[in-house]
Image 1 (cartoon, one colour):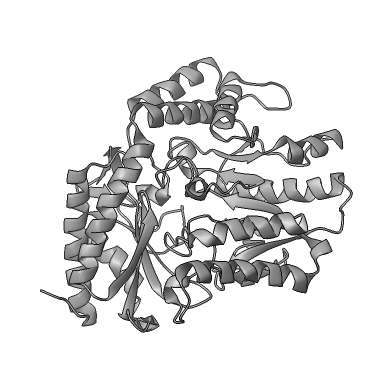
Image 2 (cartoon, helix red, strand yellow):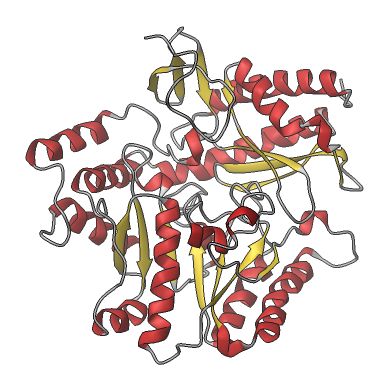
Length: 448
C-alpha cells in the first residue's frame, strides 16, 4: 500500500511519518521493513507491549459474542468484571465509570466533582485549581485545568480557564532550602491560591502525582504529598489525581500516588488500562462522592462507547497479563536500570541533566548550562531535533518543549513494562548515538 502524496487524513502535525506495518513486544516495523524500538510505549500507553496474544484472543472472544451494547439498555460482563478488578486494586475508590480515553476520564472527574458539590449543598464550589505547566487532556473542559501557554489560549473563550499554581519544579530552584522544604513551599502555594480565590468557591485540586507530557516525569519531594492532602482536607476540597499516564503499574506501583500513600478522592485512568489495544479510560471514586450524585438523580454524563464490552475485555486481559508477567515489579526493577543508564549518558553529555522519574517513566532536561539551569535557545528546536534524530536511528522517544513556566526542552524514555535489561542496553545505545549527533549538530559539549 502506498501513502498518498496528499492524503485525506490529517493529524496535529505536518511532519511526514512512515506507514506502520506490524509490531511485536517493544519493536515496530514500517512498510519498508525498517525496525524501531518503541522507547515511548506509543504515547506512554502500551504497557504490556505490542502483539500480546492473550489480550487479542480475549477481544476476539468478546467480539464473537457481542461487540457493542449501549449502557442505557444493558450491562455487559466484561465491564462488570473489570470494574470489580479495578476496585479491588484501589482501596476506598470502589465506584468505577468507564470512558474511551484520558481526556474523557479527566472530563468525567471534573463533572463528577461539580455534581457532588451541588448534591451536597455546596453549589458555590466550582473552581478547580490546576498547575502550570501541566497536561490533563485536549477537550475544552480538560484544557481548562491544563497549564499550557500554547494549547489553551485559543479555547479560553469557549471554556473557562481555571486558577493555576506552579508545578513543583524543585530541580530548577536556586535557594538554600532542602528538597523537603521546597516540596512544602510548593504545596503551600495551593493554600495561598485557595485563600486568594475564596475557599467557599474552590471545589478541587487536580494534579499528576508524577509529571507526564508537560514536565517529563517530574517527581515532587515526599513532603509535597502529605501537605497537599492536609490542605485539601482543611478546606473541604476534593483531591483529583490524574493517573492517565502514571497508572496501571507504569511507575513501579499500581498508581503513581501509591509511592507516597497519598489517597485522592477521585482518580482518572486510561493509557495503560488497555495498553493501546482498545480505546478505554476510567474514573474511580469513593461512595462518599458517587452516592450523593446518584441519589440526586444520576450522573449527568455519558458517551456512546462508555463501558464498551470489547474495550473492557481488553482491559481485563491487560490487568491479568500485568499480574501474570509481574510487570509492576519489572517496571520498578528495570526503572532503576534505566535511570542509572541515563545518569551515565548525562555524565557523557553534560547538556543532559536532571534525570528523574519512577519505574519506567523517566525524563531529563536539555540545557545550555545545567548548573545555572539556562535553557537552550528556542531557535535550536533541540527537542524536535532529538525526536527526529532518534527516529532516523530506529528509536522512538517522547519529547516536548515545556509550555508555560520556566521554558526548557525535555524528553522521556518510557518503554513497555516488558522491557529487559538487554533491551534497555539497545535503547541506550541508540540514544547515545542520537545525542552524539545532536551535540555535533548544535555544537554542544561531549565528554569522551
